[in-house]
Image (cartoon, rainbow, N blue to C red; front, top):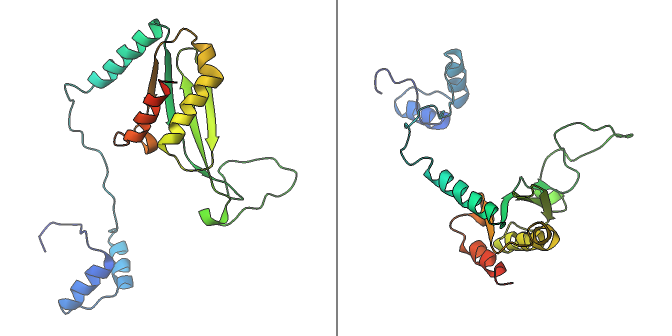
Length: 195
């Protein structure tokens, strides 16, 4: 053991085994009590240190802002898409309060198999005329669904809001079906351009 070290990556079980091997048997419970009395315990890493500014940090944002301004000036459609937090369908506890006339009973735990599936809200924010749209689906967040949502938005609102649009700029976060490694989403969106 190194002098001055006040932490370890070992679990209490691993510490107990090592102490037994050294001839000082101590159970996990004993270790937990001893560590608590000395104000020691499990800790998590904190993201506190900065790596300093990067010279090209703003370049991608400035590039996207320039493209957006050019598309808006040309009268083209600019759309931001995001899949928001998925929710289990069924009698599950939810944060917040309601004022019902009778008691609302829910399951004790959020176990997906006890519900009727999952609801995935897909937000579409039309950045030029500023209205927002929400598409709800109960299957998986797939690239085909992302393409369907954009197509549905175009048919329901986008075509009327930007009738002179020759191009559509679609911006999305990098998660789920819109991940940078998911080429299917990009292929689906390109397929919409030929409709």
